[in-house]
Length: 120
Image (tube, rainbow, N blue to C red; front, top):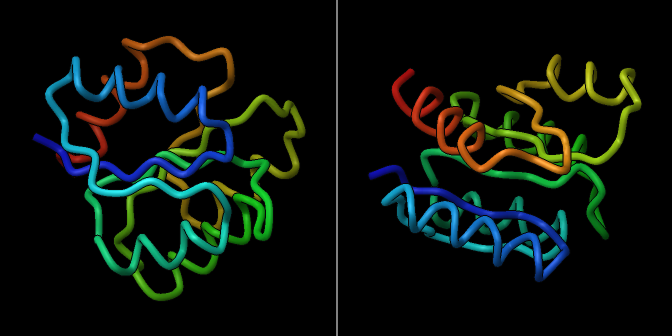
């Protein structure tokens, strides 16, 4: 069982992720609705994996990745985005994000990535 944090400002997306993670027998340790909350809750719960939306209020996904990696260099972050801005995506990967999943996403792809990343 992988301990996962979901950081997305969309109630619907968080709900979908909760369903996917429950089906995959993973534990949801925290949810965040904005970037500031994501950084704070990551430090409080130290999840195995964080699913992070790129477009978040208060702090965007890139800022969250940078701040989390600065204090938790072994953090495992999967960025979720509808953006096709390759510059931002590359910046997130350089900052330490493990992978990028594009919306709309495939449930099996999400579960496979969580399993893959948690075993590293």
